[in-house]
Image (cartoon, rainbow, N blue to C red; front, side):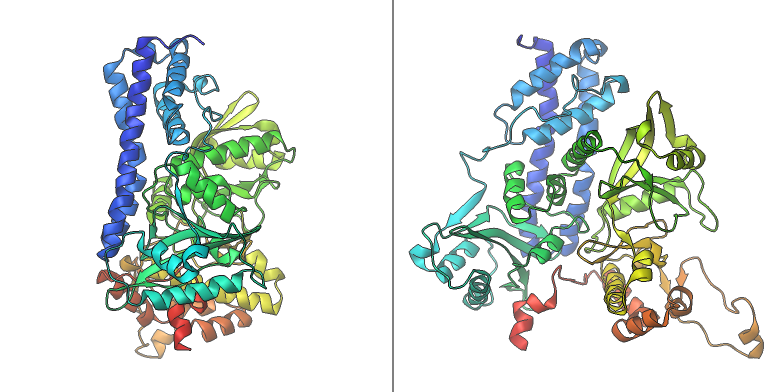
Length: 579
């Protein structure tokens, strides 16, 4: 390989400077989160989490501006960009975030080169630098050996090593609860093996009003993943709220239906490797997203998708279920995701345009999704092989999204696309469900609406087709064209009729504003099945009361966020102590 020429090396260095500026800011957010958590400044913590999402695009734009200012246009050609990439690879050989730096290079490349150059020679379609063992010098996790000092003392040391300055209400009491739970999770009879150890990630994860210790216990061939949430009690002291050991609870905790975490991470790939051993069913792209590395997540997902396309033969088809009035949805049956495009014209009675829909998807991206809203991967200029589209899907695309569709030889290029994990639409699920499964799903549907409200989200359109059931049986909201903030909605009770004439009118006898919502109307309109009504009236009667919604609204407006733990009350130490 010829050494890079000086000019190409300068371009590569400028590119890497842009990435390193971005990553330094990312680490600063993780460091700042610790102080904000201790100060219980939830609004600032949430604001930091939200603002961070847009930083990547800002840094890319800054880098593009620097390159176009400092270098002549002939650098941005196929004759020279391949050498820029080679020079960049040389800079990554000892880098601690090479996989993220490669994605940054791709983001800049797509802005300075013509699309015809978006191929392997000019971009990182496959990783060029291994991320294995990047933390050999400074490990990303700490090891503790309970056989030396005892499990209780070891756990107490493990907790205090994170350096939180706020006092614990009763650390000894909480550690005893953790010890009992860990012992129950180990195979019986418990024989302590020579390798008995606890491994925990070097930094706390912060999200919402919780800080998380993430670790795994090894004993012989047994590995027990665990997460310990740290929260504030009513007096502002710290408590260990629980220890999460159930794989399902851990999967829900780290789900893409929740807001992204804040953490001070030096070597992201080692964190992902650590978490994958704990959660083997989670793809790496989803873990990168959970840690706040959204662009890397998108790149990894797209690589998985291209790999699957090359190793499958089934056609893409329109998604099953009731067709959306705003979104056109299709799927590849052998791939567990759906692809969504905004229709060029929404079907009546919907009255929304493309800009409004995009704005609502951006709102969801930045919102506290409370474990109840599907995260979306957003792409531009996605090329798909025309041969893999069913005739019905191709016809639907040509009819419904002609302004977003370019036919380029054997490919079609979609100018704007959302991708989400596939779920069973709730309306289809309820049609086939037994009475028991229906009751469980409707109960979780009610919890979904309540938890979204606590996160300042009002779904707007409560039709079942706008919700899905995950493989874990959770009800998730995924259709956002009528979404709104709870604090921007007027929840009202229907005024009493003044006389018989008011009662018999075909229209409202009182004034209704565009943001007015009457929860008592929902039962006869959305929930006509008596079985559904019974479950909601029994388990979630407050959903139909404007006073409940206004109470949530007032608490949100007061700046006191409603805490909804991302795990059930049944595993919380404080709840169990009261029983």
